[in-house]
Length: 164
Image 1: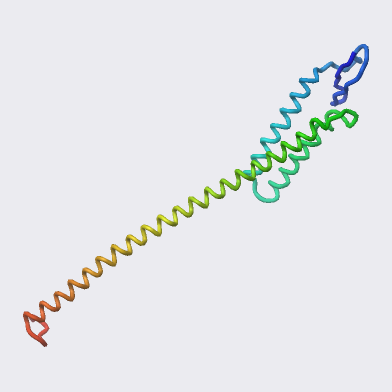
Image 2 (image 1 turned 90 degrees about the vertical axis):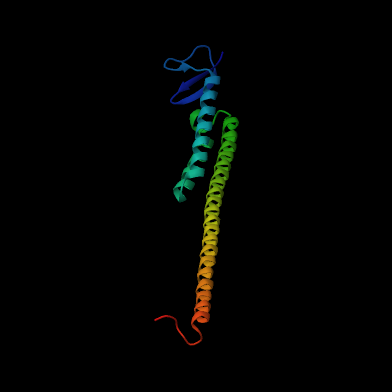
């Protein structure tokens, strides 16, 4: 009978008639589901850290996540069992999670820069409108003042500064 047993935190697959005392039988598909769930959950965390993390701490956490995703199957089963089917996908998922997190980080940065550029452009548009409005009114005041000087000069004659 081929059975998977858990001994000392390791899954051991072997041929034997009866399980050893102290060992419990485990379905290999349950173990596979736990491993895949662990790898995917770590991938989600790596994505979040790659997207929102800051500085060297983020790089270290992403690296540790990759190591955990790749080495965890070896730690769980030992090197005697062929765990490449878990280690290679773990490394692949880590790479994809890191890339996806960095793409999201870049998209966030572009969105923030676009928002700042839009604010700056709107402020410049308002400043130009205010400048044009003030310039128009000041020009109107100057024209009226010059017209008032001409009208006053014609009414009172040359050299006369007006009533007084």
